[in-house]
Image (cartoon, rainbow, N blue to C red):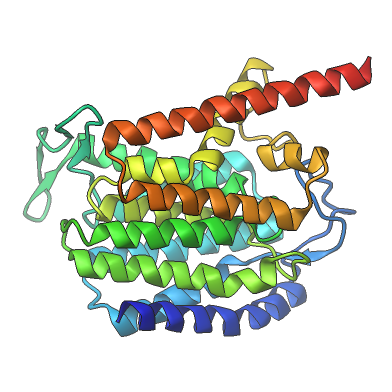
Length: 352
């Protein structure tokens, strides 16, 4: 059933993407560098955006076919639809990054009301850290329990991923490949756990459905891309990966390891922008994939590199324990930091 669901999602996404390209072109959901001179752009031609549409359509249809949709999953799918809608509006109107950030909080907060809290996180040094010990009783048309710490953690975690993952879509084929790999390994790991109101089997199914949808989109996004993920595809990817890590009961360390390069890059970008007195939401051409372009790497090579690293750490996560995952992530962080420092040194020497 897992392979069938993955293939169905793949086929639906692959078949829907040409229609999304036509839709985006007709209604002006395109990125034209001559009109919108964004510093992070790595392309020069007019390219349709709105990649989140075919991906979400495939996930939505396959989920209703393969999974018994309950309250929580319905909330997640509704949150995904709202995320794509915000992305489409941004693809057309170029919304303020601050407005998008605020809307991210609203959407994720809304989904959490369906029961997407994080009861605990694994302690890498052993044991767990419980977040469900604080309970608020709310009397509103009946007695309801609210877990402030569990819900706050989920809110911050998912919103952060929506933005961090979205930043790593600057090169053709980069994002759908590593998102598919991440979803696949979260699905494999989900079989070891069960929780929330979605079983381990359904969580794994949902993970494989997401992997298939992004894989179906990949042929159209790989160099030379015919459509971009856009904000709808990038933020949807982060939203879904955050959701999967919660549904599989605390696979945060696994996801951090698999997404090590995008996440380390995001942390570096935020620190650099803040230290320079700039807004962390204002884009630039100093992400890791931009650095690789500067040293002569092609777009295909960069995309495959991201996929390969995600696959390597995804496979490792099946065998590594909590502290070992931290150690592996630290090695990546140090290696990436050294690379960035060396690149900065080379650029300064060329200027002088």
